Image 1 (tube, helix red, strand yellow):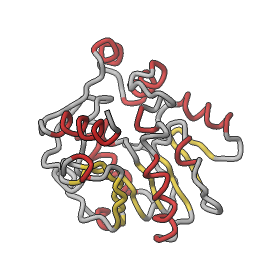
Image 2: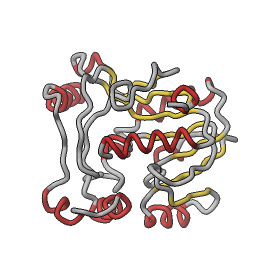
Image 3: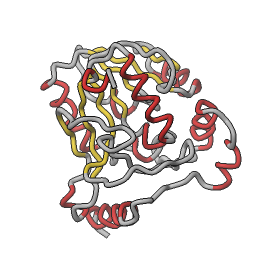
Image 4: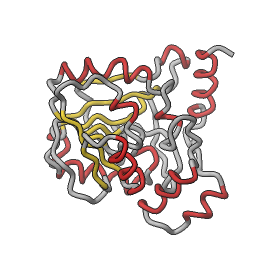
Length: 238
């Protein structure tokens, strides 16, 4: 099967049913029932419950899944004159730190302490912090990169995360959104489903810029994964 055919088949599986959810497998869900977000994601990381081939942060952080964003993101950063990045959640930080960031400052944050300790040991010249995107005070940066995060949070926590981001000193938000998706459904922590950040309960305005990770033409016009760029002032007072 060609890569385009694989993309199309996966998109059909995910988006022909507007209520589609990829839940944690039952043996993993039983291990995290009733636990807070930090405990849930720490378990997912330790157990590689998202089945990442190269990264326990999940297949979305593998090199094949990040090829387009790694190619296109440097140009977007230059276009918007970005001088500092808060990468939250950073996971193992491999894909973003592999980019030629030059003089752009980088801070990685993650709710999982083990990830932060591992990153500090692997990248002693970089700053990594334990951060809960939902409730912790966030370091200021030109852009907060929030890729493949809110898609794993229940709607209430995803809304709380955006409100917390709005309280930060960051200027822009670059976050995963699915173009053309018609409905946002709820999940348990650690499950996956697509989100369209322009739809309720988020209601963000039209993004300033969009980095499309999957060509809609390759998936038959079904909802396409993208990174949308928003000026945080556009939703700070909501």
